Structures are given as structure tokens and as C-alpha cells.
Length: 290
Image (cartoon, rainbow, N blue to C red):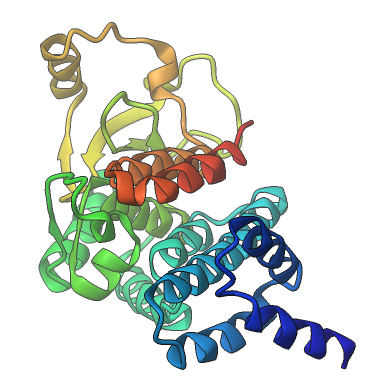
């Protein structure tokens, strides 16, 4: 009851012209956390003054960032952080009200359709062909050029709901499906690329190998699912003046993939009016330091 009285009193002072007073009010409200968001939204609907509306919007945003920060820390510290669940958290940064259960349902439908086409006798290349056929032919998911003016295309919701994602969202979808279907394939550390490596069946999962490249049979470009060879990758290194290193063939952990994803998404918010989002995304990415 006391809390309700204080919250109502603080709400009445949100439009105080004194910035110092407002900052104190804001700090007190932020301590109450996300449960007060519905009340703030109701206040927003009943407010006409533009400056006050902006203050309420910013406060709601800060409360959601607080929650997201906590969720990302919990995700990182979980026993086996799921790439898909991490990607869902990033989607909520851009669209806090997104229907997460619907995304999970869409993912499960795709996983099941691919699983029905797989069997224990398929070679890795045949498995990759099944994935490509289901994702990019049956579901008609498209790949688009990375465009930092289109942040939504970085989100896992892009291929799942709108059938069009960029290299980052499509590759995360592809890598997660490989994991769920127990296919020997993983997102690797190629500079400036989103690449999935397919491994020989005799590679022991979770083992560290001095030269993982020896076990790679071919690569898949995650945006479209097209396979390519070591020779093609070597030509990319030559064209790009990149010296090949063993570390480029290392499998990226889900934490590293999510950090890379957050840093790329941050580049979408370069304009002065949106730089607060860029700073928050970088701060979230820094939570994922090894």
C-alpha cells in the first residue's frame, strides 16, 4: 500500500521542469522495476504534454533494458546457454511485446519438418541439402544483404515470421537447427562472414582439437544454405587479404555468437537520436565477455 502511494506521488511529479528533481524521481521509479510498466503505459495514454510523454517512454525503455540485462546475465550463466533463447532475448530489445511463444512454435514446426526428412544414413552433404531444401525452398526463406538501416533483419523473428533475414539472423536459425537435430555442424569464426562448418561424423562432440580444419568436410553460407569448399574459402581469404589462421576454424560458443550479433545490431543505431540504443547494445554485448 505504501509503495502504491509513493508510485502515484512520483507519477504526479514526472512533468517537473527541474531536471534534477526529475532525475531523482526517475531513479526512484526504476527501483520498482518492470511491474510498474503497465501503470506507466496507462499514464502515457492519458498525457498530452510532449516532454512528459518522452520522459515516460524513456523510463519504460530503461525498465525494459534493466530486465533484459538481467535476463542476458542469467542466460550466460546457465549450464548450457541456448543460442535460440539468446536470439529471442535480442529480438525483445527491438520489439519488447513480441510473441515469444509464437516464435518458439514456428521454430518447432521447421525443426520437425527437417527431422522427418533426415535419417542415420545421410552424409553431411545430404543433411545440408535437406536443410537448404526445407528452409529456403519449402519455407521460402530469403537471404538479404546486411543493411544497417534495417535492424529488424538482424532478429531471429525476421526469417521465422517474415521469411527474410540477413546473414546474422539466417545463420543463427541454421546453426540452432543443426544443434537441435544433432547434426555435426557449427558456426565458426571466419572474419566478416557468417559461416557454418560441417564436420566428419567421427569428430567427437565437445572435444578440443588442435586443428579442427582437418575434420571440416565443407562449409555452408548461412544466408542461403549454399555449400562451398575449402578452395572457395581460401580464395575468399586471398581476395580479402586475410592471412588464414587456425583460430578462424574454431567453433564459436553460443555466448560468442550472441555477443557478435549484439555488436553488429548496435551498428544500426548510429544516428544521434538513436545512439542511446547503440550504447545499451554495446553494454549488453560487454556482459558476454569470456
